[in-house]
Length: 114
Length: 110
Image (cartoon, rainbow over all chains, first blue to last red; front, side, top):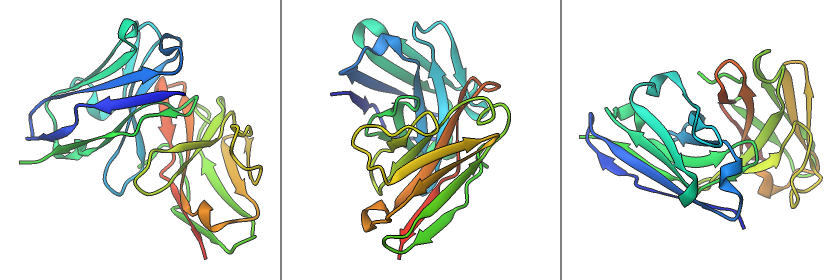
């Protein structure tokens, strides 16, 4: 059974940092591009960033460029999102996912507020 | 503002057929397949259509998908109350090297 389990969310002040983690199991993690997708309260899905199979390429949407960094450790079957300079508009549930295959985690809530 | 365009709401009565549309551009739907996700309140999205018209195992054959040019559609026939949910289209965008989503359509079963 495919499982993606996110962790690391929580309450952080504007300008602060958080590191999200995603533990994968039940599939060959190193064979898939992986993404972080977020959903602000009451809003739709928004792709945040993705990373190639071996971690050699990363892409992100414009509003997080220079602030968020996606990475992976295939030996640990894990995906990460380092989030710096957080803003109120980054408040959302963050999902570890591969929208191409339909693999999604349950999400972790990040709240940016003073 | 989502890259893919969906109507914010749709509705139908039990047994009816409803269609949800998704419009994109040549850099996404026009050159790549479309996936459709169903999201119930408080839960993660669930894949209901992949590769524009394929159903994952376990998804009822009441769900079907199609694509033409830069647009795609999700059709649900024999509507049931359990189909009430938010539906999102998604496609790979070759310009962004990432996924783009529609804004979501809230389906109400009257």
